[in-house]
Image 1 (cartoon, one colour):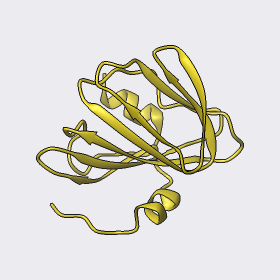
Image 2 (cartoon, rainbow, N blue to C red; image 1 turned 60 degrees about the vertical axis):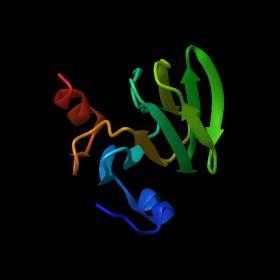
Image 3 (cartoon, one colour; image 1 turned 180 degrees about the vertical axis):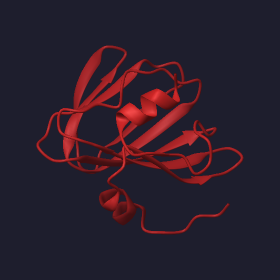
Length: 121
């Protein structure tokens, strides 16, 4: 599946916790929206992950180390890294992420973090 669109616009317009936009054989593009006070949830992947933040602000926690993250920041999370991202701002935190290889089923939409958590149980 090819994909060609304005990823910044799509990321800023997205109101869902997670929405898979494109999935290929070796990578996947996902947009996310994290509400104020919310987080992605601590996790570890077997794949590398790239996250690009396009609106809002928060904190990246990688292997216990905390760093601020603002609009226009990119965070690279190597496979095996324990990580979480927490929205410390007052507006929804907008981002897109690239998994290589894909992490979620093509077309996945989780409207809320609770829905995403339930899908992983």
